[in-house]
Image (cartoon, rainbow, N blue to C red; front, side, top):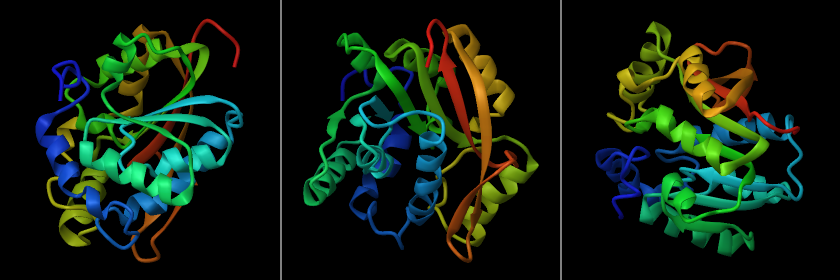
Length: 241
């Protein structure tokens, strides 16, 4: 892994956590079961706000390819990147088995930007921002990877007593939906903080939605309650969407 890939968009310990679990990523009953439940809701949120057929989409922190495949199935031309090599390997194999065309790369967003990548119509970053050392700098990188008027979709976790109780205590220790240590409370991001991080990058917060997850039924749904998991739609200034 290059130093460029390890700049502000990655944490070695965080990468190791997910790389070690990569081979179980597509098991809907395994450690990533909540993501399998969340993914249709995330895809629904995005598809309801942008036109996906023919759009150039970049999925940052793609993991094993859950969202990337959903966006490709909707007609988008998808590039998906992650710094965990095992995750990309799993993603490539799964896409090959399904016959889905996705450009998977082991690299960070900043390395992609440095390579002179043409701007994208849409950038997505799901359940990743709370795992990186400098989320504000990474959002700035996302903005530079977007065309003027391009759309940015981020999914992350709010920071408050409820998110601590549900996102860490319940999810990791009581219900064991996630491996212990998956999240660190101090890295959770309030929506107001996300909007503040985005403004210097020339991005405006357009919309928010909460995600409700029922651990007993395993079902997820969009909600107006953004106290725990939430989705944010932002837009880069300087053009029309």
